[in-house]
Image (cartoon, rainbow, N blue to C red; front, side, top):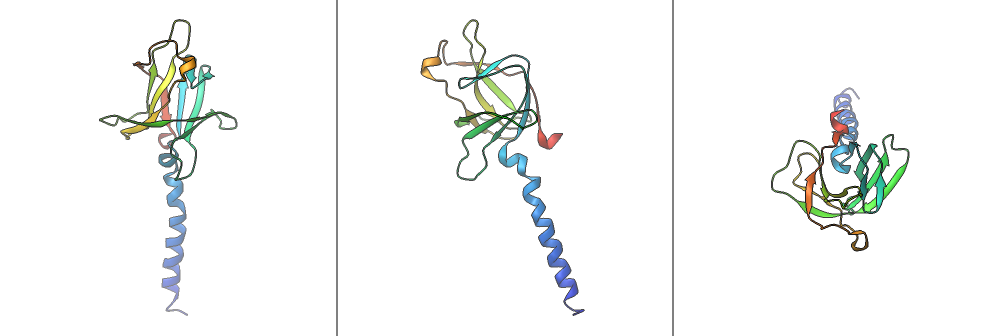
Length: 151
């Protein structure tokens, strides 16, 4: 029995430490981002008033295009939206949000969201019936963002 103790202890330590690996990468997997906005924005027909929100991907490896928007405390799901893949040449260190140009008197509509360090992101297509202004994205967001991993 004494000969097996170091082997059993090493195996137990390995199994215990491997349980924590998925938790350490959870924010990268679901792209969880906390965003604070200072003006109302439109996300595919859902108006978000100024405040803090959590944006993240719906879990699961087969569906990487469903984006969920929660209240800041994540107790209330505000919207679930489908996005299409978007690409850019160089990744940035911070979350990046781009908006469609807003028509007079209307809030800007979210166009793309990129997670820090990624050059692939998510594009939110505007509904044709809601489209008033040109669909050309002209503005970058100046929203305050912080990723859960950096808090």
